[in-house]
Image (cartoon, rainbow, N blue to C red):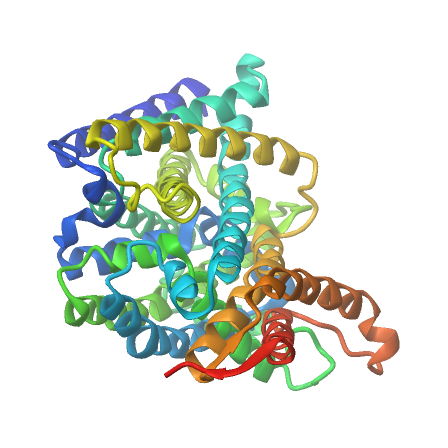
Length: 483
């Protein structure tokens, strides 16, 4: 297919987002940027969060991941569901009760200055790495489909993509993202459904008649019962549950959208609705992955990287299927990029610059500072994407959850200790505890086969990291109890 066609689609889609951004950013203030003036309809947030949660990682990696892990990811997804219930019933009431803009200010109220800064710093590190990885996946495909044909260097491709995100989010912030996410969710889901239809049609079968075909192909195993295995179903389930708690409930980006709802009741409606739909959507992605494998085998399409499975099959199906895939990819990419940039700007502005508490600053000056932070975040994304350019050796979703295990674990430990104990801590020691926990986890992970009778850590590394942080906080607790 012609690169000009792909570029035209990308420009048209970006223009549509800019139109929405222009409408939603009118008369915007810092409150609009950070929490959408608490005016976001819950059902719009719920629908848009589907695209934001799935992102380009799910769109590209989950279908290809079926080749190596079959349907075991579905057990993780079932864990997600329980994690969302914890968020709706435990975390959201806390955030609304305290009237938080940045969720990490809770740590300041509960433990003190150093705990607060530690939590915010780990979020910034986690979201920067995760969002950069997601964006890398998309711009890499753009490079192959569009820019390589014109010998445009990769760094220029990255720069163009990041500039588009800056322009679309600079003024409206979370209020713009709530509405653009709905557009992106629609196109992404439509792309998956149409891809399934195109593949089944090309194979001369109905969609439902493909079910026994993928079962015979041996790609639908969901439960691995060997406790040594990385995909052991019990640890998959609990890993999914805790991944959701930390990557949604303790993540400023995802909670910022929930906190933009009118009140707690509507935010909880959003969470319950969104979580139920997400289970079905993830199953649909796994089903797509299974039939992609069947198609690739039937047509003799060789794939070296699991992340290449979907794009290779889509491009082999013809121009229309290629266009559908491309639209789905860019629609999956934008929610991750714009949401991450907005949440990181929010966190740094409030948690480190204290922009919401600095008296004597005019609104114009506050907005100017926020703009500077926004541009700095964009520059950091650029650097990390360039670093990831040389590290594309495993399925991106696998890398993403591994990163989460190390960087979100301390947040899990901090919030668990704060919510489920009444102890204060020696605040100055909290950064040490939070840094030591991931280091210990890494040492255990690389030596687990030898030290633990062949056991291999999977995503449950996150739980271990959180538990070690919790234990460390027990060791540095004070006798004084919070009343």
